[in-house]
Image (cartoon, rainbow, N blue to C red; front, top):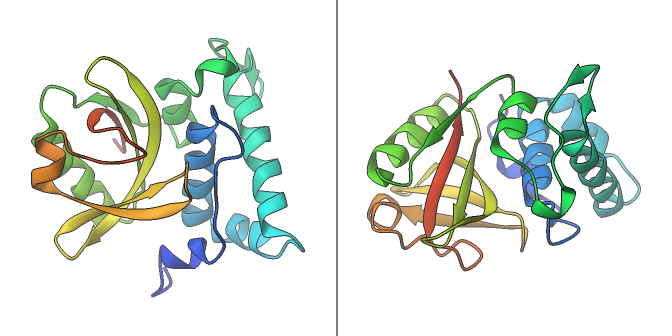
Length: 182
């Protein structure tokens, strides 16, 4: 693993291409981090933003289709984004963990996974509904660092902010699910 992980992935501003592809964007970024060859494939494009956009839109079609890689899956309306079970399957049959009612415990589990260099998709939203997917990358100066795909930027969230539902990630403050390694 390179010393500049995960910053090497963010040399270009990687932004979700539409309002409903945050989950697919997170999946592409996670794959870029976990699979250096894939990261290099995107990074070597004449236009990194164009290739990234193509990959995200293809991923979104794949994770919401009735069949993915020859396996049947529950079809999902693309207009509703990416379901957490599809994210889990794409990352190797991870567990979708409910963290809405215990965000401090969720924060600790996410931090532990990122210490093993495993990026963690996290569903965030209002107190009523999950609305967005972000990617936990690791700890930075006492906080978890998240990739926020709506703006393509890195945002640090402390354990206190996470536990008290003050995330401030694309305007959403409540964590709902974390897609964690087994």
